[in-house]
Amino acid sequence: MHEPGAAALAPAADLVARFRADVAQLAGGAPERLGVAVSGGPDSLALLLLAHAAFPGRIAAATVDHGLRPESGGEAAGVGEICHHLGVPHTVLHGEPAKLAGGLQAAARALRYRLLGDWAAHESCSQVATAHHADDQAETILMRMGRGAGLPGLAGIRPCRPLTDGSEILLIRPLLDWRRQELAAIVAASGLEPVDDPSNRSPRFDRSRIRAWLAAAEAPPAPRLAAAAAHLEDCDEALAWAADAAWRLRATVGDEIAVDAEGLPRELRRRLARRAIEDVRRAAGLTGPWREDGLVRVLATLDAGGAATLGGVLCRGGAGWTFRPAPPRRA
Image (cartoon, rainbow, N blue to C red; front, top):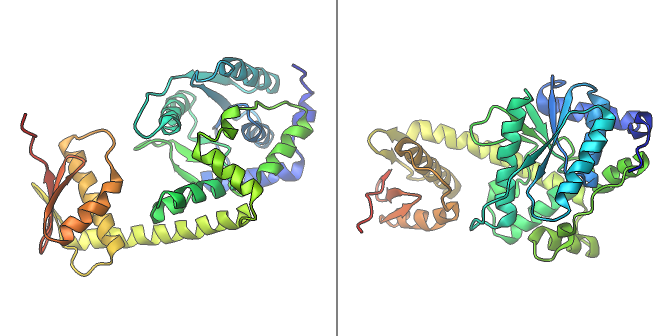
């Protein structure tokens, strides 16, 4: 592998300054130690080069190898060589995703974040950055629109959130305002050859089909779709604030949770029902995923005064709603 000198690998100063400001906005200042997830593709290699130039001596890199392709081991080793040349600590994280109902890519994503969370804690990284960018954001919005997503889903990829549920480590996406071609140009200028993952073009996956459609169709530009996602995120935050206020006024927590949802807009009723179900599940020690798309059915049942079970929680409607753990099923 040809390795250019370290100076040749450094992106232009204005790009580094832009990246440094993007990270500081999400991390609340310059991070003491920043983790970066690097697959070896052009986006993540650009992230690595920008992070190394912006925060020298303060980053660590990790590559998750799911072992789903014969080439993945060699690709992870190639990332390790680049990191060694830069003087960046690098770790390969191994794990094969289970075959879950949500699909292979969803299972791989969940496992990837769990592995990154354990690694970041060991490396004393308070934030882990991924290379999601504006084009990814546009693809995500269109995918979720096609699946009939609600407002939280249409808000797209969040710039900052806990890496996993309950984690104090933040997952940050400092490149959400950057375009794919900008990142590719950074890697091209460095002389590095990025990994080409054929699954990114496979019509088996929704994202690949959306990406091909965006490239061929006269669709709204990615920055406009990303801006729409930011506006929707603002709306989602406002509704979350209103739902918290309604919960304090209208929810009573005891052996069961009682909610007075009378007269509230549908979206607030949905959020109150979702919170009640999650709180009951947490108190009862119910673990594992539950079908949130079942909330549409449960809301209709509650509004009609009936009863339904979702995620192991018995939900009853009427003048007031109640939520409690569902009784065990009879054999």
